[in-house]
Length: 283
Image (cartoon, rainbow, N blue to C red; front, side, top):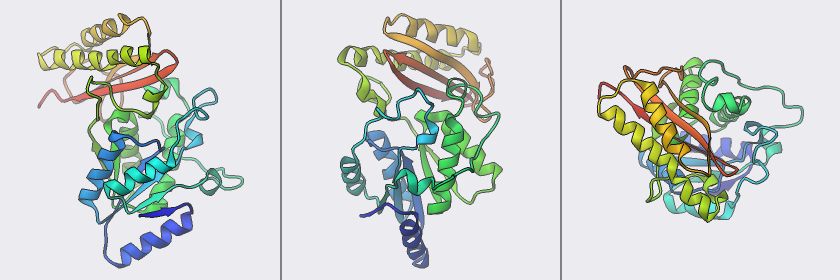
């Protein structure tokens, strides 16, 4: 497996692969990889001749009071996981390599970014779109893989690709969960033993809301109220949002008469966790 820290090195290697007629997949990550990331890499390896995993903790998608400095890092473990899963390259640039001196060009988006996480993290998706745009230009992948746990991010990237006529296919992959239901996340490592136990309330609320819709409930307000009650019953939980939106546009929509995304963000202690499910009334 190749370990590369420079844009030039990545471009040269990808050019060599292209000259051999090989397809290239990309899995963008911020590192501290777990089984959720591994599932993306596995899918990419199955569908492409070569897979690049970017490991870059992107500073411009963090707000001034967010957890950039505390975010867990372990590049050695990340490389072991990538190599064992079949990745051909890990791209691990420094911040100065990605954002050179006097960097001033950003990709911003309206609409899809304004609800859910965009409300409480107003600069987040500007940073996400900018770094993903750069990665697409550097790696020029045929396919890029993103997890559904960050469902709004997945919708945002799909919209950016569509709006900019980018020649890359975006592949969304299912949420990977712990045995007790908690969605796998690098931020789970922040939780104390008591908080980790309390965090299961997120997946309980998700399961409850999904079951109501499967049982035929169409009123989004009733579903969200039930989910909110479940979360509020946990003393360590503090709700950021519990919301239903149209899946394609991320517009608030409280009726299950089209494909909807039901998403939650909840603080367990000081740790902000997210979870969601997508429901299509026609399936």
